[in-house]
Length: 260
Image 1 (tube, helix red, strand yellow):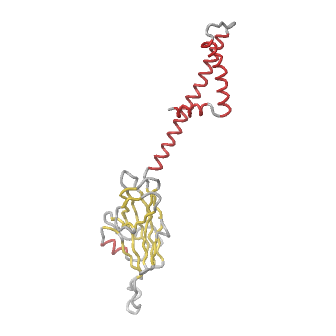
Image 2 (image 1 turned 180 degrees about the vertical axis):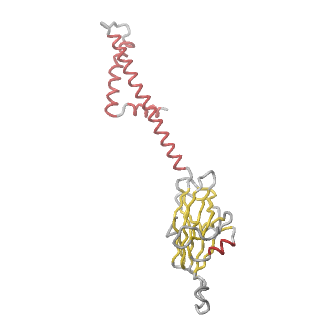
Image 3 (image 1 turned 90 degrees about the horizontal axis):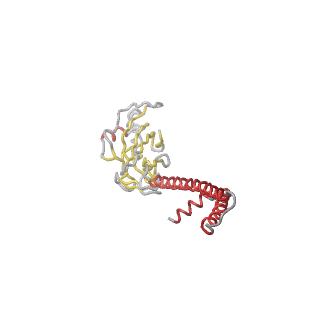
C-alpha cells in the first residue's frame, strides 16, 4: 500500500511544475501548522487569519486535484499494462508457408510434402489444435473459376508432420507443420506404349488426410491448379483461422502452395 502512495505522490509532483506545486504547498502549510497547532493562542494582525486559511485551503485543493489526477493516470497505466499482458497470453493461431509450402526429402526416395505451418501468435498455448481441409476444387487453366466438382465431402483432418496424429497441442515460440499432400515422381512407361493423350502424368499426389476420401484421392491425382480451403481450430474458444490456398503442380519439379 505504501508503494502505491509513493507512486501517486511521485506522479503528482514530478517534474519542475510538480516540484513548484510541492513548494507552494509546503510554504502555505508550514505557517498554518505553526499558527493553528504550535501557537494557537497568538493573534495575527488585521485579517491575516482569514488570508492564511484561504491560502492553505486553496493549496490543499490544488494539490488534491493533482493527486486525484495521478491516481487516475496510474489506474489507466495499470489497466493498459494488464490488458497488454492478457492480450499477450491469449491464445491465437498464426498460419504461414515455408518454401512455398513444400518440404522435400531426397532420401531414401525423392518425396515432397505439401504443408501449412502453424504456430502460436502469442505466448498462450494452443491446446488440441487441428488442421482441417474443408474444400478442394480444381481450377480451369488461366481462370479463377472452379471447373471441377468439390473433392471434399465433409471435413477431413490433416496429419501433423513428425507426429502422425491429427490433434496436437502447440507450445509458444515453436513452429509446427501439417501435411496436406505427399508428392512423388512416378515412373513413366516408354512413350511408345501410350499415346500422347493417354500417357500417365509423371507425378503421384496422395492426400495425407484422415479419414481417407476416395473421391479426394482420385480427383487430386492429376497435375493442375486446385483451390484449397484450410481451417485451423483449437480448444478453449480460440478463434478459428481460415486460409484459402492455391495448390499448383505441373510435374514433380514444379510444386507449390501459395495464398489465394
